[in-house]
Image (cartoon, rainbow, N blue to C red; front, side, top):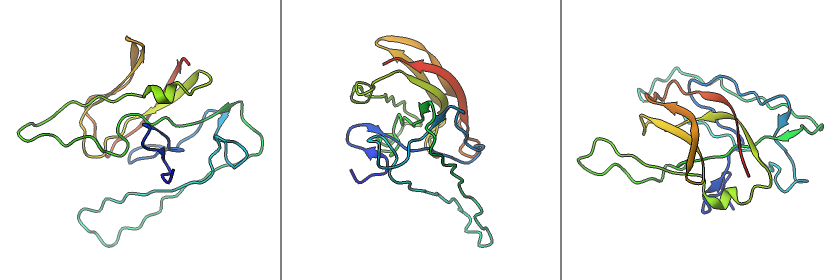
Length: 173
């Protein structure tokens, strides 16, 4: 697989983390961490930093001062952290058909992903991101045909005010 996201053909892909305009710093729970290195089949073996600039007015005296700081330790945490990407991270959904002002799309976490889990998943954050393409996004938690509840809901999405929403629920294996 050549993509830093994982195997995009399976619908089961991942990022180490994502940050967007309007978000604060990202801090993992104290007892969780990302496995880094080649000794684990699930460890992160490389990091790609991707930065999108938006200077639609072509202002020439703007300078980037962003960056990242990664804290590394050889002491394993109790829980492995990870990112589960749902929806359409590569923005491949069809365009809005002509003469429609909006359209609803639904995506889900495919069975090909969840069937590989060996344990329950503790969810501690939810980040909804739609570039400039969306105006409302709702995340729900289902088991079979039963909706267990809303995870996150953004009724008036604005690109410049995105957020990672702290959550605390378990997705059962």
